[in-house]
Length: 451
Image 1 (cartoon, one colour):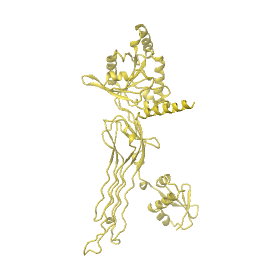
Image 2: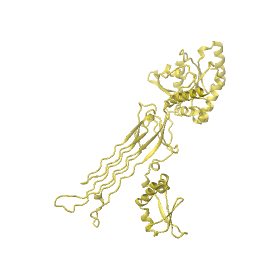
Image 3: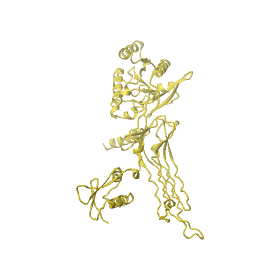
């Protein structure tokens, strides 16, 4: 038993490593640059004993920018590099010297990448085939030096503005492949062979009882300037729409295709029933997306070269009686090339009438809401009407602070106190007349005010 257990673990590790190569989803951390602090300094020159303030402004932090790189077709790079940080702005200097701006970080992604918030799963931006760069996170503005705060009554200000904070987010990147035509079907029905015969793609092909793990793209050239992009979508299995196997990973690549070629093993080489296979795959497509189930489709009856002519005619009649004229049924042999030319011509004609718009996923979060810095969010400070000596501090800025602060930890509590001072909340409580011993309520927490 022990030997079997060790063998099983080894097999599991080997399979897991192969699956990890299927790089169509990645989790990454991104951070914009913090703005540099303004500087506090005063002119110190010979014969000028009381020079005025000359502290320079801090530099702006760098932005986090996404761009499409058409030379990429996977998210493999993000498996190795998971953290992306823009440069911080430098602090201002003496003699009104402006701090250097932080460098932007430019993240290159393949066409079809959808950027989502990791925690909520909501879409932030669908890059699709976007031409212009997308600035996800703006760097913090640099703070003003003390030269800006001199007045007739305050000629030597010892205060400079701090730079704006950085913004940090955890994202999910999902690749939803962009292709005109998608090859779908159960494993081992011949999709990879078809793609290799009709395009410049060279997928790995073998008579395995396992599915291809990586989608492949190929350009199909028909001559006279005609052609289209075809994708070999890895084999879908029953239960894919519920996440069985790698089903959801594969199904997302079909969403952007305009025409589906539903490939079946019409000769039942694997002992499968081709009509039953079609029903099962269609059920998976509809379960995943009703729009997907309504895509223009061609049923491609493959492997008929291994059948006698009379058996071939029987299975084709069953298929055509069942699906035509709504769905055309074409007989081919990917191994010999029989019927391939006709299939490509019919596919091209179907593309000419298929909807041309590439499916794009609408943002589910406004960028302004998603990237707001905590110091830009509102809050309120109020005195209770029905309780003596009770005050309330509320609002999005307070909720966000509490979300990443452990008030039961000593460091967390010290941070909380500093936050209350720096944001002017203590001053507002004093303006409302708070006295020592009064109570401050903050979202389920109650604090005693001590001078």
